[in-house]
Image (cartoon, rainbow, N blue to C red; front, side):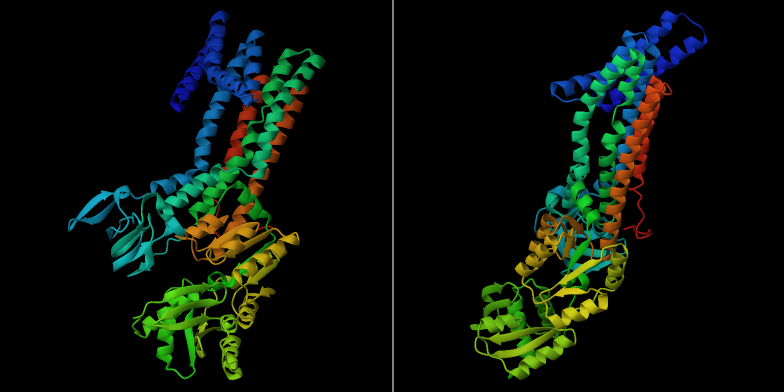
Length: 621
């Protein structure tokens, strides 16, 4: 039955109740009053009985079944006022519940409203405006000030400031220029861009965010699953208890009241409304939590494993020094850059960028490229076999190096640099030193996490122990493990879990994907546009702001706390009402009114999570 039809039934039964009340005040014929009350009961009771019958056909016991039995019983014994009041209150309560539940999904609705509708593209040498869903991969999309970006793509020309709040939760405009990425649904504040479309329609980052939020809000927490199983046993249990009450009291009125008051409406919705509101709040602030079970696990985390590069550091390393052995500095840098063009690693991209800064032309393409996990890269450039990577790549390929060369690398590592060795298949040609700055907010985030009760903080890195120690000391992290391969990180995560810790692993979502998947809760940092991050992680922080991690923990704890508040309140109300019924203090209609109010209070309490404040509250352990 559609919601507008229910509205008509609510209005009709409400008018009949008012008419019956006026007739009573005017002392009109009692038969007329009874007819009005019975009509109100039938009209409001029809959708309730219909739903109860549907549940019975599916071999399930529903709340509507309890109400239907009570209402039919009330009509049989001539309690028409009670039957009319209960059916109206139940139907009206369901209407208010549905309207209020919509409020908890407001964050998702606001996201859906931000979906771009149209885009300006080049067709046959002319600029034309077409629906966003008709844009094809490879199209050149033109975006002016005030327009929404309709695709994910890379800037071909122009400069602009773009508001990426829909993706990252941060409203501070980000500068975009040639070769930088832009995302669907973001808004161009100032400037002009020509963008080559790389992802369109349902493949865009924003479309995936909406899909994930919808799936997450539908997924169920363990508590919610328990409550649903509980309700399946609770309803037949109440029917049995009602029969017991009837046997002991021989009072059909008390028995029917007991049936109605025992409906676990507030209890059944106590968990899902909190979960939906909490997930919606996270999405609004650039934090994707993939479901109620992930929310519950996040709230229980007592240990965090951090990847270093790109998580605790900015992920924007720079070349700080170059040591060469029998070769010119620029020649070494050019050779290394031509190899690293094939790499997606932070350090490789840094070497390529340094070559571009020095205006070195990368002429030769790498061939026979071999990525050696946790070590480096091997490739043939200009018919010469070259190696770049850490010391392991030299040792495993039997490349000789002197003690003086090793001391050069050690000196740079002690300063906090990462040493990248460059060699051919015969000798070490040079060492490129690279440093990555620690995030400005990292130390404060570590402090806040410790203050919140998360004492077990570990840093894992493939970097050398000197650089790792320096970063850990600055941030206040006591446990570190350096020189790790991706599989080593997985083993360390497993070892921490075996000690009984509820562990979260946070990394950049690419190289750390195996370790992220192994942890109790996997968290991807800066996941915008990263498919691997979206698929692997349980929680995705869509911006490079590490403060989002603190917010995610606070939100998860607040959501679980809110869920528990709702559950205790719902159980308490049912207990008090049932006690009141058995002691003769609570009656049929008044009990139903209190019951429906308790449902609304539970929902309103959950709605507080929709407006949960950002970085402005204390986190209780």
